Image (tube, rainbow, N blue to C red; front, side, top):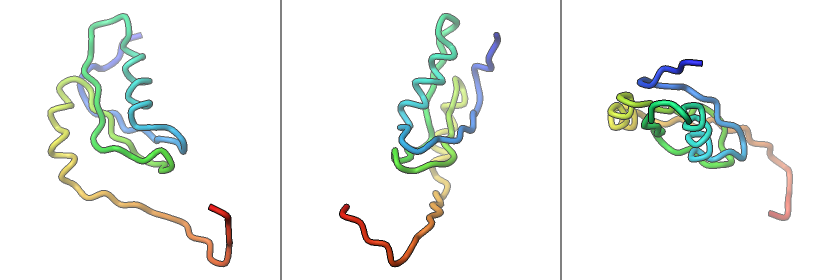
Length: 85
C-alpha cells in the first residue's frame, strides 16, 4: 500500500490517547519504506479529544504557521454533581 509522504493528516484523537502515541501509530504506517518525518502541530492533553494535526515530510515545515492559530476548547459542564476527586 502506498502512502503520501508529504502533507497534513487530520486525526481525531481519542480520550486517553497521547499526541505522541498518535504520532507513533502514524510512523508505524511508514515502517519498512522510505523514512518519513512525522510530527504534530500542538499537543492535546490525554483527557482531551479532538482534532490533532499530524504533519508529514515537507508538511512539517508548516508547523510554525499552523501553531500561530488559535486553539478552541469546547466543554460540557454538569452542575450539582459532587465527586471525591
